[in-house]
Length: 318
Image (tube, rainbow, N blue to C red; front, side, top):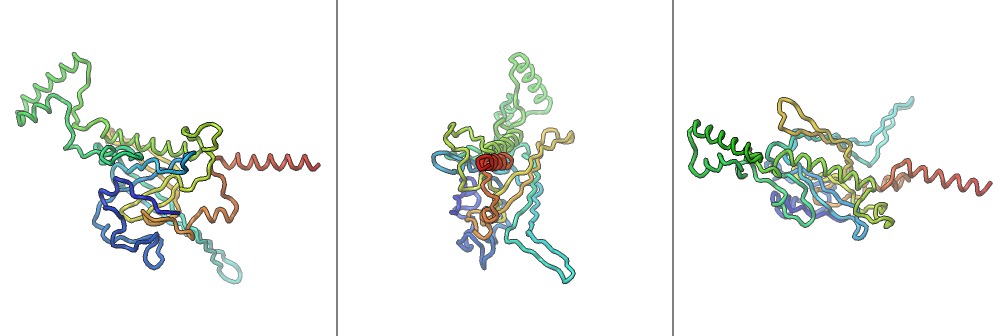
């Protein structure tokens, strides 16, 4: 499987390659599953998710990349080595599988004015999907505009202007934005963009692709690329992942902040811009076990169809 190009936003932080000066391979040195980029230890690099939608005409394509609005407060990665230890009368038996998978939990907040506020869709520029911090935003209130022009006022003058502004607002019926943050660059907006990103992925992964025409078979096509991938540029790691749950956390102590918790089950670890190492490819192992092929439908419907075919065969024979 070929490597995936870096999203535009990532190139701003790390240049044209995330592994500059490292081994140019889909694996690290000496057969390691990923490359350690030593310079990354002092860099602030983004975390995010790439979503590849199912497309009936051109196959799978990178639909969008959603960067976490602010770096996570906590990132926990639990590595399962698929090892079983059996104690017998004659000793201890160890069973090892070459499949590795990971439980990842991410907790964080979208803040008040985050850097990343919406998905980077195909064909869009990074600048159109990002904020630039509270200080660079314009305040729509008349008080802020006068302060900017005249260089500030005494507190009593400012209070008078605020009362006048509120009175005018009462007559016109239009609310003023005194926060200095544009509404489409706020943490509130970023949270809902992040949440909807996962809802769109789930709709596509379940086979309910609104872009596929009826009867075209687009929703049941076998994927060539996993639909969602977790990108950790700090550690130069990419995973194929399955979101298990997404939790909204709000409290009365910080009613304006939107906190979230994301839990993932992940596999196929490799360089953030690398391809999958076949010996670590879970899909291949599922095929060997004969339990792949459930893409686009539930296990229940798959088994029901098999049972129905078996019943038809039996009735035809007897």
